[in-house]
Image (cartoon, rainbow, N blue to C red):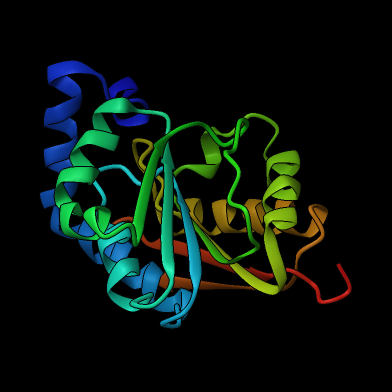
Length: 199
């Protein structure tokens, strides 16, 4: 489980390969990107991009925009960089080894933010969400995805995870919060919210 949280070395590369090729992981990431409704000119950030599946989907939609990614695993930065090499070369995709509590500078406001199965590991998640809200333009969107991987996880486990994300987003000042569910085993929750136009 530690390797899934922070892939390192040879074992980390194997974990990345597994995450990239597991059918449910690909479904989850593509579904989440679809819900985020990325437009061609959007500037998008993914936090904890792993092997770069969602990064590739985001780049396919933000064709005249820019996709940023941060991940605290150097092994995943390398793997996602290889998977998205063409977009990285033309500087439409920029991947950085960084953590959510030490965000790099993005120069201009972002239009959308995605985090798949990573928010549960953030230190002080409400404060991190406040930091992320400051990076978003007014009416910018965020999507937090959770597919519980604890032993015996059920639909109720997913519902509790969604409720927790909803509460954290509310505390951080986001509005228009809603949850969607993907019927996998266990189900996946995607909680979407908007940065209020009042700032």
